[in-house]
Length: 117
Length: 115
Image: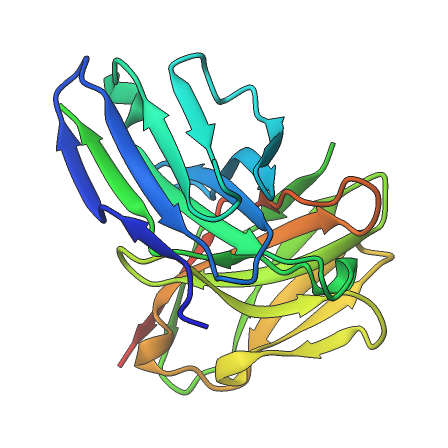
């Protein structure tokens, strides 16, 4: 397995601009997750996909945030009209339940660090 | 709702000393428990996990953790640390059944190993 990859690794944008991040999960994994990590904090859950279906969204995911996983493979997270409070590390993780719930371990990508000026 | 408390935000130790990073959790249902490590500007790497069975779990890089159900704790230990163990360590929980997908993390413990 090649691991979870994310692109870009770093993004600097001006307030009010839109940004989009991409996540490529481990190839056999049918579950995909997005988390946000701010400075000095642990990751916080944002949203979760099983195959192409978005099954859960956190209240942290405001209307300016949208996530997709159109073919059940890669996923994108878009933030519209960015605000300075959106500055954070955005982490993607993937897992599989093909080996049962006990095997459903999340593997994380390197993250995308967003800075909103 | 679940929560995770990592009792120490920072733990400084000298190289080759033993270390314990403390983690307590709160949950109304049974859980799986995890420790992840994060090196600067990188994602999270799984160190070890407790799913069931033996309460002493061994992980990568010489780390181990012990699940204590009565104390709702899952402390991480290493008998002798190296400079390369300097990193942020996160404890996390997940429901063991039902809608078990999302991880709930603690705030992390920064382990600094000094020469």
